[in-house]
Length: 162
Image (cartoon, rainbow, N blue to C red):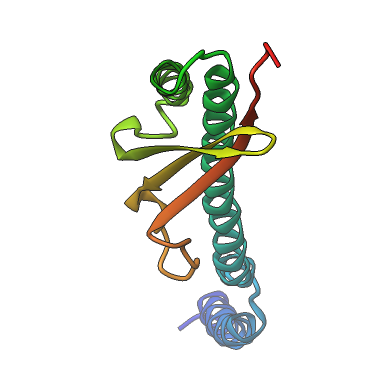
């Protein structure tokens, strides 16, 4: 073996030893995957909070839409001259309001209830919607509202003739 080939083999063996040493050392101190692991932990919590907010927002928007429909039904009923006319006006107004919120609310799941009672101040009209929807339980760790959402309001209908 001549001197130049011996020097090359020593250089290669030194490089292999340094590569092994630096390779094992770099594996112990390599942090390239740590950001992905940290993101996985943080993303799970973040997404749970995000979907919880969306789920509750859906529930609140539904309740607001039902409150609007009940209020519109009561306002329309006040214009009626007798109980039958008040019921017709209220039902039509509630159905129009529920249809307007149709992507959010399923009008077929809403049960309307109108009750009229006499009082010393006039006739009291109770307008109630019982709404049942199973779309509220989207996530198992988010508490869902009761099976039936009830929204009601009372209007006083006075006789304008005195």
